[in-house]
Length: 92
Image 1 (tube, one colour):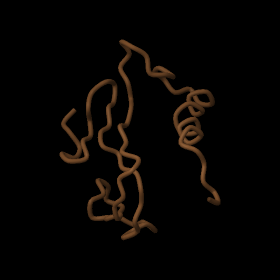
Image 2 (cartoon, rainbow, N blue to C red):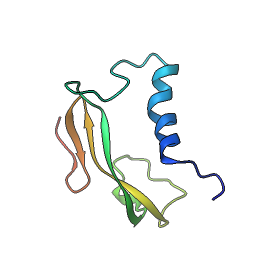
Image 3 (spheres, helix red, strand yellow):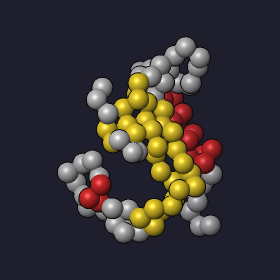
Image 4 (cartoon, one colour):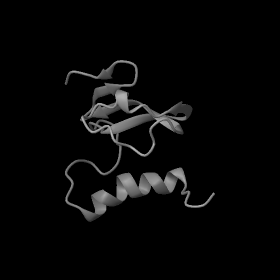
């Protein structure tokens, strides 16, 4: 597939490399006993992009009504759950 990169390379580019390049505070890796910033994904889920479900005021997207694969199920920030795909943004 043209332009495709592996999941491993994507994670490296979006998670590991920025912490090596920029002065980002916090742990570089997930470790036992350390508060994690992490997203839980379902890489197999297929759905259509609906800008009306965006949590931002900016709803412009080239992907509106397009079928995409992969969805964030949960997001944890500093060890606390802050987003759930069924409940939305949670009180922090």
